[in-house]
Image (cartoon, rainbow, N blue to C red; front, side):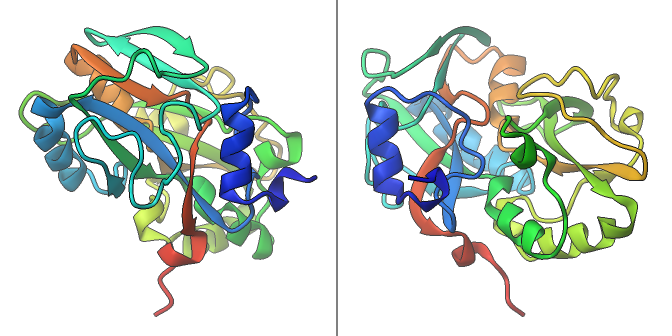
Length: 260
């Protein structure tokens, strides 16, 4: 069965039973989200951080302390994603298949919007999506742009990049702009050095993709930004998704599309 035709429940079952793969292109029409779970004492700081950095950190759902499911994610957040990253004192210490043993009663899970949500709309508008063509993970970069700091949380903006034919850049901006709750319009178009990215061939997360002649690199704010803040701020304990290995929710992409 084509993974694009799976329901969220079917995808979560496959991840629960051991499938480990980036989720771009999975579950056509269903919304994917970034996971970040922090101790309850940091929950309010993270919520304020998201509020002040809404393009990078659009909050789609939040769970109670210790909860491993939410209103929009009725599966198990500890097992039903295809990969996790564990942080201690701001350092990524392990990539894990599940986090049952690592989940704590004080962890507050946040589900943050993902730009995968508007990729089908880009394709429908004639904008190619290179990592979908290649079957790879989207490239993601830590920029030199600082997010608005809140309390104990600060850090750099993370972006995802898609090469877009020059004549399609305006279309890409217009289409993604209809999805403001999942990053919306690009934060930068063109020269990566202008936002502190030194080498497109060496993404900080995900896989590199070629920017071909006649194409322009287009950068969208990325929901891995809270994980960058966890690292920059030395947060004592946190759990995130493995970048590009998303939580597939029981919500539709069209739920986040602005029609007027």
